[in-house]
Length: 117
Image (tube, rainbow, N blue to C red; front, side, top):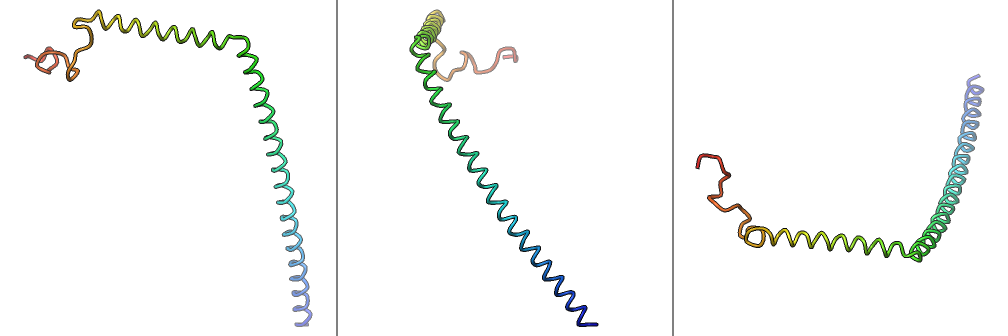
């Protein structure tokens, strides 16, 4: 009877080992399938990016052909030049022809006004 029990345990262990091996192979196959699907998805994403970039370049060339970007750049440059001209005029209108020189502090004793000195 003891040997029957041991034989039953050995057979059960053998069935569990076989089932474990099947599960291990299943996980390996599942990993391979998952990796393959991921690689296919990455390839499709790459093709989509390439197609989008070529379309974007075509649209950019079409927009440049209209002349609008060049006109907009000129408008921005003119606005910047106008701002710089106004800043120069304001500096020239300041007493002494510009901001105070030296250490950047107002003339006087270096103390803010109104502290009793």
